[in-house]
Length: 225
Length: 393
Image 1 (cartoon, each protein chain N blue to C red):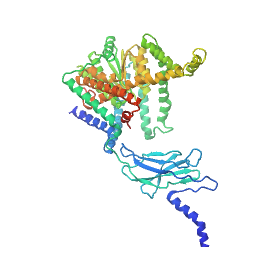
Image 2 (image 1 turned 30 degrees about the vertical axis):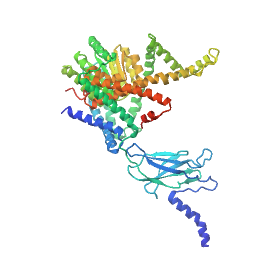
Image 3 (image 1 turned 45 degrees about the horizontal axis):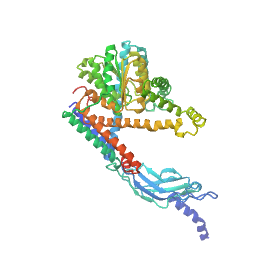
Image 4 (image 1 turned 180 degrees about the vertical axis):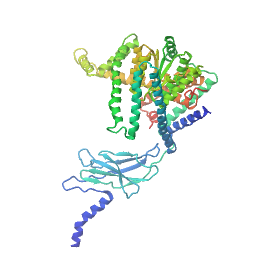
């Protein structure tokens, strides 16, 4: 029963949600909307478990003096402070001049932006590795990337103008300009490959969904058979 | 005298009567004349919905032309009886000839009219349209194509699952990325270091997270078998509780339930970059020998994979987020592309019914490829039937 009931509920609700995609009638759409809204309540309970886990893991690390344990103290203090301040301020916690909002705007957001800004450097280092030409495929990738990069900046237009309007290749069609070439690469080969991946992934989504609904993929329920 | 008084009062009385029924504004002397009314208002229930909207179309006022500047907009008004009272549903710019009213109650009769508004005042429509009511439908007829495709797909999958169950296990090509998972765990074991498993950054509503968590069970089984520690940082609470179950299940299936470490699965934060800070911190402090990324990723994909690359760990990634695939391809040793992520659990488990499902998906792909080719040919011949049938709302 411990597994049969969840499997039965998964199957019934799964089929019902599929049905709601095809049946717009209120007898189906209203319960379907309700089920989706109910997920928010479940998630709220989940946060209690998650918060308890975060405290346990970090207290444990502090107690055992694991590497970087002073940072765990910062984490625990920040977590408790944010929760307490939010609880005191209640539903108005995101209003202007509230401490929770101040924490979000002046501590959390800048730190998130700092992490995000690192991406620029990581893209540079990853691109450097990606464009090392060792195989024919890597060569094609590098050439395509060079065209796309140049075709999207003013330098590409200048280069095209210089090549095609000066004495080098006078009268060459506009389709050979870097901006046109990059557009073609993005619209045709890139889009084709992307759509093929998306179609495959969409079928994978359906197959996984079906396996879960039918109870064939049941590992997520618990460790007991 | 009486006649003269009546004569003088007549325009005022007429104006009051008009204002009572339609709030007509009389232009002041010297202002342009009031616009001529819009006409031909037609209202109809919006099909294929739950009775939440009414579609209204009309012909613009003859004065609604670019140069005339006699019409500045229209007021769409609604009432529950032809005599009013009227409520303005929306104010619309000049040139507008249609609007969907999405503020209606299902099954209730409504009457509509369109008033033309201009510098010279407001002119109500000559007639009222109605009654119109919104009704819900039992089937969205624009989704027949999806229903057919889904029925076919489910049929194929079920057929191949049952035939695999009967003993006809289909061939599955080698997927190097999935084979590399065991290699990565083996390497971590040899080096005496841990394995880091990242099941994406999305909630359980994203099916990629489900796929990532299902693979986690097989990975946890291997790590338990080799007695290698595993760390699973998770973004959302529901995937967190499932991840805990998966790791426990892995240890149980490996015959080592006692080796399960409750701290191995960690709830971090749904904040994208807060999560990145934690995971990169784990990479740099704990130095896991293998990083496995399976699930839905966004901008953090390269931040994680490049940091992991810098630590020298063997990295295996899998995602169906097309825009993140190039980053993983560059920074990881192996990458599962799109559908391979969903095939991984079947591939790893080897369970005949799951493998049978893959065969069904392959057959559906063949049908889609055929439909794409046929669609291209038909569109080239200006035959739009297939395209229209496949267009959904």
